[in-house]
Length: 113
Length: 114
Image (tube, rainbow over all chains, first blue to last red; front, side, top):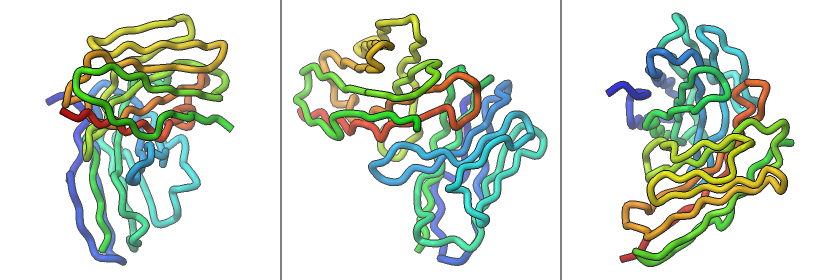
């Protein structure tokens, strides 16, 4: 499978714990995006990378959230001290450049109990 | 502020019937418009991408239209099938790059009944 891969697919965690998600983009894609999606809503932009540089962050990305793409390939999204409001689907997408099509992964469903 | 509005919010139709989903946007400067299909619990999958100069684009039973003057797009589904049940998300890209140039609609939740 050469599409965008996200792991894990599902994560249940207790409030206050830290969680980390991983995204492996399509190999030749230089852009990688993170989105959050709650039930019945469209995806909301969190942050994006061009190669290893994090170029934009949404105001949704509080100081408890951090994203990295150390070698310009895979990316990780960490949420510290999780809250129940963090429960959502976290989607990763990649593209080659900005105006071309973005391909999405299957998402990581986070449930904070 | 860039916005994408979709209607209806949800739609139920019988298998075999046709339907049309609407997308209105206020995104400037416009680069392209995309329709995605998202099955429950899965990531969005691209159906079509349209640039300023394209009025109509088909992908099997899906036909998208774009009117850049009125800033409206529609997605027409012909001879619906049970597998068409999903959320359909309209995404408009502003030129100039940047991920914030991707503005997502909230989607239309389509249910096909046998």
